[in-house]
Image (cartoon, rainbow, N blue to C red; front, side, top):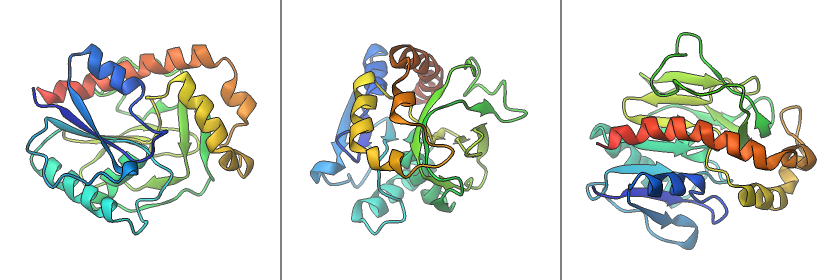
Length: 234
């Protein structure tokens, strides 16, 4: 199998548990470190799928790599190649497919918040098997409109558009890839986000509460979502 190509936009927002999942399922992958100045490849013909991680920047920023990544996403979707976008990555997918991305009205959604299946999608193969009693980790302030022909899968009370799918392309606004050390690091690096937060922002203390168990439950949700996506790689 050709490798999966992962685009990392910040050193602290790497593949985390997603990398462990791919290794466990014998799926080779490579990481393109945009944060280290690595150029965006001009084609996706040499890989089996594309994954776009998160980042604190906006897809509306004037950054050369954003334009190149959205072009690559558009190329991949036209070839029906599996694409996965996480937080910023989901917003890149939305932009590449012609949808608007903009700051959310409820301020930043930070911490452990539940998501729920959109009515009528409870048995959708992409999310079937998720235990919705498990809280999901969030850290974002932007949101997106749905691309044309997209199916909305998941919502939260703070942000209605949390996960969507278009053919083999899946965009998720939240972070299933988190490891305990990643949460600890974000709590320090992004403390200013917490300090200016509103109703959808949790305190550092709440984010850290029962963290080991929350991470374990988060990975159960990740296993469902990631398993559905890697089926497309075949």
